[in-house]
Length: 214
Image 1: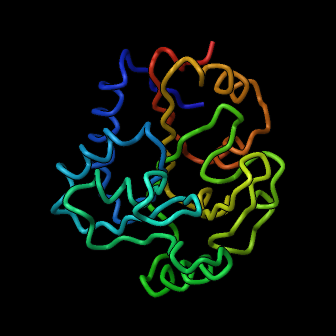
Image 2: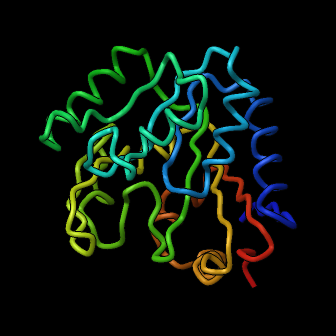
């Protein structure tokens, strides 16, 4: 585990933004949730003149103007809103059709392997919308997939594990004491989805002291 430990969340986000802005990445996939919002604000300021295609890693199956929408959050924080932005069209009201459309737009954009993927990690070890025990983890022949997450009683759409693993670099962001246990177990070899998506491929873990594995 390539750990980079920071004394505070602010220091972590500043370092991550500096690393990403200097990476020359032209295709960057962004995860949702509250943790990366400060990072995306910094990226909007530092990378506004760089020719980047931004891709949403995964999405809750809600409208883009819903407070829970990852694409909506990214649009609000990565200011100005990105010109080249590949998202999941949940307004189609059909998860399978949303995935097909996402894959068609991916191919039309000329995307192959991503340069960089920014990931989070849940307390249960999930990343993107790859939850433990779900069929999405077994998808090997698609760019994206739809998945019904039983414990959340909701549909999600997500890029697949092979797409994450094929990227040139993965950066995992983890902050707060609630993440310490799962990070400790990943370092000890637990087969969580985050481990399946990152083991054996170049991955940098940016964590604050509260989340650092014991």
